[in-house]
Length: 186
Image 1 (cartoon, one colour):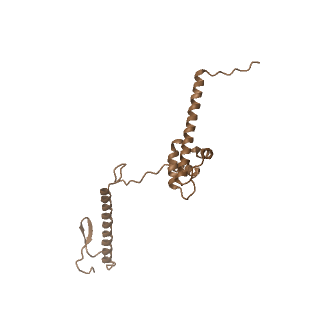
Image 2 (cartoon, rainbow, N blue to C red):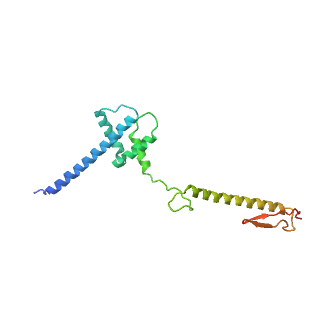
Image 3 (cartoon, one colour):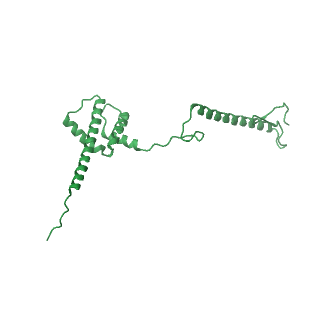
Protein backbone atom coordinates (compact mmCIF):
# COMPACT_ATOMS: atom_id res chain seq x y z
CA UNK A 1 0.00 0.00 0.00
CA UNK A 2 1.29 3.33 -0.94
CA UNK A 3 1.33 5.94 1.76
CA UNK A 4 -0.11 9.28 0.83
CA UNK A 5 2.56 11.63 -0.30
CA UNK A 6 3.03 14.81 1.58
CA UNK A 7 3.19 17.88 -0.50
CA UNK A 8 6.70 19.22 -0.55
CA UNK A 9 7.41 22.80 0.33
CA UNK A 10 8.20 24.96 -2.60
CA UNK A 11 10.99 27.46 -2.39
CA UNK A 12 8.45 30.29 -1.97
CA UNK A 13 6.62 28.56 0.91
CA UNK A 14 9.92 27.87 2.63
CA UNK A 15 10.98 31.50 2.34
CA UNK A 16 7.64 32.66 3.79
CA UNK A 17 7.99 30.27 6.73
CA UNK A 18 11.52 31.51 7.45
CA UNK A 19 10.35 35.15 7.21
CA UNK A 20 7.45 34.54 9.62
CA UNK A 21 9.78 32.75 12.04
CA UNK A 22 12.33 35.56 11.82
CA UNK A 23 9.63 38.18 12.43
CA UNK A 24 8.35 36.23 15.43
CA UNK A 25 11.87 35.88 16.84
CA UNK A 26 12.49 39.60 16.32
CA UNK A 27 9.26 40.47 18.15
CA UNK A 28 10.20 38.15 21.01
CA UNK A 29 13.66 39.74 21.27
CA UNK A 30 12.11 43.21 21.22
CA UNK A 31 9.64 42.25 23.93
CA UNK A 32 12.31 40.66 26.13
CA UNK A 33 14.51 43.74 25.68
CA UNK A 34 11.61 46.00 26.75
CA UNK A 35 10.89 43.84 29.82
CA UNK A 36 14.62 43.86 30.70
CA UNK A 37 14.64 47.66 30.38
CA UNK A 38 11.63 47.95 32.70
CA UNK A 39 13.11 45.56 35.27
CA UNK A 40 16.45 47.39 35.19
CA UNK A 41 14.75 50.78 35.62
CA UNK A 42 12.75 49.33 38.50
CA UNK A 43 15.94 48.28 40.29
CA UNK A 44 17.60 51.63 39.64
CA UNK A 45 14.59 53.69 40.75
CA UNK A 46 14.34 51.69 43.96
CA UNK A 47 18.04 52.27 44.61
CA UNK A 48 18.95 48.61 44.32
CA UNK A 49 21.82 46.93 42.58
CA UNK A 50 20.90 45.52 39.17
CA UNK A 51 21.19 41.71 39.18
CA UNK A 52 23.91 39.95 37.22
CA UNK A 53 23.25 38.65 33.70
CA UNK A 54 22.05 35.15 34.69
CA UNK A 55 19.64 36.50 37.31
CA UNK A 56 18.31 39.09 34.87
CA UNK A 57 17.54 36.35 32.35
CA UNK A 58 15.53 34.46 34.98
CA UNK A 59 13.72 37.61 36.08
CA UNK A 60 12.83 38.53 32.48
CA UNK A 61 11.60 34.98 31.87
CA UNK A 62 9.36 35.09 34.95
CA UNK A 63 8.05 38.56 34.14
CA UNK A 64 7.41 37.54 30.55
CA UNK A 65 4.94 34.91 31.71
CA UNK A 66 3.09 37.32 34.00
CA UNK A 67 2.91 40.32 31.66
CA UNK A 68 1.91 38.22 28.64
CA UNK A 69 -1.50 39.96 28.59
CA UNK A 70 0.14 43.35 27.97
CA UNK A 71 0.99 44.21 24.35
CA UNK A 72 4.62 45.21 23.89
CA UNK A 73 3.54 48.70 22.80
CA UNK A 74 1.79 49.24 26.16
CA UNK A 75 4.53 47.92 28.47
CA UNK A 76 6.10 51.36 29.01
CA UNK A 77 2.75 53.05 29.77
CA UNK A 78 1.90 50.27 32.20
CA UNK A 79 5.29 50.56 33.92
CA UNK A 80 4.95 54.33 34.28
CA UNK A 81 1.46 54.03 35.77
CA UNK A 82 2.50 51.19 38.09
CA UNK A 83 5.49 53.20 39.38
CA UNK A 84 3.25 56.20 40.09
CA UNK A 85 1.02 54.02 42.24
CA UNK A 86 3.73 51.90 43.86
CA UNK A 87 4.02 52.34 47.60
CA UNK A 88 6.66 51.01 49.90
CA UNK A 89 10.34 50.31 49.59
CA UNK A 90 9.99 46.92 47.88
CA UNK A 91 10.50 46.26 44.20
CA UNK A 92 7.66 46.81 41.81
CA UNK A 93 6.06 43.51 40.81
CA UNK A 94 4.96 42.26 37.42
CA UNK A 95 1.42 41.95 38.76
CA UNK A 96 1.43 45.72 39.38
CA UNK A 97 2.15 46.27 35.67
CA UNK A 98 -0.75 44.00 34.73
CA UNK A 99 -3.11 45.87 37.07
CA UNK A 100 -1.93 49.24 35.74
CA UNK A 101 -2.48 48.01 32.16
CA UNK A 102 -6.00 46.86 33.00
CA UNK A 103 -6.80 50.19 34.65
CA UNK A 104 -5.40 52.13 31.70
CA UNK A 105 -7.50 50.01 29.33
CA UNK A 106 -10.81 50.85 31.05
CA UNK A 107 -12.60 53.56 29.06
CA UNK A 108 -12.91 56.78 31.02
CA UNK A 109 -16.38 58.36 31.22
CA UNK A 110 -16.73 61.58 29.30
CA UNK A 111 -16.52 64.71 31.41
CA UNK A 112 -19.84 66.40 32.25
CA UNK A 113 -20.39 69.50 30.20
CA UNK A 114 -23.35 71.73 31.09
CA UNK A 115 -25.73 72.32 28.18
CA UNK A 116 -24.99 76.07 28.24
CA UNK A 117 -21.45 75.45 27.01
CA UNK A 118 -20.45 75.11 23.36
CA UNK A 119 -20.54 71.56 22.00
CA UNK A 120 -17.36 69.75 23.02
CA UNK A 121 -15.82 72.84 24.63
CA UNK A 122 -14.83 73.77 28.11
CA UNK A 123 -16.00 76.98 29.77
CA UNK A 124 -13.74 79.98 29.89
CA UNK A 125 -13.48 81.87 33.20
CA UNK A 126 -15.78 84.57 31.78
CA UNK A 127 -18.40 81.98 30.80
CA UNK A 128 -18.19 80.42 34.26
CA UNK A 129 -18.69 83.84 35.89
CA UNK A 130 -21.68 84.48 33.60
CA UNK A 131 -23.27 81.11 34.38
CA UNK A 132 -22.66 81.53 38.12
CA UNK A 133 -24.02 85.09 38.04
CA UNK A 134 -27.21 83.93 36.33
CA UNK A 135 -27.61 81.11 38.87
CA UNK A 136 -27.11 83.53 41.78
CA UNK A 137 -29.68 85.94 40.30
CA UNK A 138 -32.24 83.12 40.02
CA UNK A 139 -31.59 82.09 43.62
CA UNK A 140 -31.92 85.67 44.86
CA UNK A 141 -35.16 86.17 42.89
CA UNK A 142 -36.60 82.95 44.28
CA UNK A 143 -35.69 84.04 47.80
CA UNK A 144 -37.35 87.44 47.29
CA UNK A 145 -40.50 85.70 46.00
CA UNK A 146 -40.66 83.40 49.01
CA UNK A 147 -40.17 86.31 51.40
CA UNK A 148 -42.89 88.31 49.60
CA UNK A 149 -45.30 85.38 49.79
CA UNK A 150 -44.48 85.01 53.46
CA UNK A 151 -45.27 88.68 54.15
CA UNK A 152 -48.49 88.38 52.16
CA UNK A 153 -49.65 85.31 54.03
CA UNK A 154 -48.89 87.07 57.34
CA UNK A 155 -51.12 89.95 56.24
CA UNK A 156 -53.95 87.58 55.29
CA UNK A 157 -53.98 85.41 58.39
CA UNK A 158 -56.09 88.00 60.29
CA UNK A 159 -58.77 87.91 57.61
CA UNK A 160 -60.39 84.63 58.58
CA UNK A 161 -63.57 83.97 56.62
CA UNK A 162 -63.99 87.47 55.20
CA UNK A 163 -61.63 87.01 52.25
CA UNK A 164 -58.35 88.40 51.10
CA UNK A 165 -57.79 91.91 52.26
CA UNK A 166 -54.45 93.57 52.46
CA UNK A 167 -51.76 95.13 50.42
CA UNK A 168 -51.91 94.61 46.68
CA UNK A 169 -48.84 93.37 44.87
CA UNK A 170 -46.79 95.78 42.75
CA UNK A 171 -44.56 94.42 40.00
CA UNK A 172 -40.99 95.71 40.35
CA UNK A 173 -38.21 94.28 38.14
CA UNK A 174 -40.48 91.40 37.16
CA UNK A 175 -41.22 90.36 40.75
CA UNK A 176 -44.25 90.88 42.92
CA UNK A 177 -43.62 93.12 45.87
CA UNK A 178 -46.11 94.31 48.49
CA UNK A 179 -46.38 97.84 49.60
CA UNK A 180 -47.33 98.43 53.17
CA UNK A 181 -49.64 101.46 53.39
CA UNK A 182 -49.73 101.28 57.18
CA UNK A 183 -53.40 100.27 57.36
CA UNK A 184 -54.55 97.27 59.36
CA UNK A 185 -56.06 94.78 56.94
CA UNK A 186 -59.35 94.22 58.85
